[in-house]
Image (cartoon, rainbow, N blue to C red; front, top):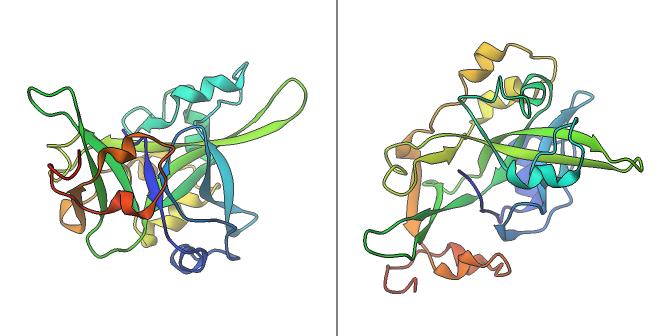
Length: 228
């Protein structure tokens, strides 16, 4: 799964990497947690734009907003058929930018899990494949929300966790974001584990366990003894 990530990329670099129509209104955050607003990139009226969406997808047919609390991730294997996600998969896809994400490794004989920060080996931004939805409450207020699509872990992540977010490359952005692209078979073909050789995974401080901690140093690699 993907339940915590970092976005320390500058707005200018986000605009360049994702070819956005304007510089996004974003600030660095290093411990992004579910149910908070996150930057999501969508194709709207032919332009790529970055907008704040709540992390935790609320299906358009949901009776209440709290339905989204458990829908932070969508499984690649069932995203095209699961009622909560299938409409969004056909028409409302997005990219969720990050500079890395956190996963926790269970240790034999220990109840304490070790957090890892996974990022590009070359330091480039990550583009997590996502879905977005628009939900209206009984009073007419609209909430736009999103979920990260996850798939099987690659060989690098497998010792840490059995799932990882789907990561896309720039040449795949157009096909993924285009709302008129309803070719679910070709879209499903994009939902693969990212090649391990382009990523690195490093142990980090257990301070990241608390989402109230939000500091660039959370991403710094540490030895197991230092991460206590």
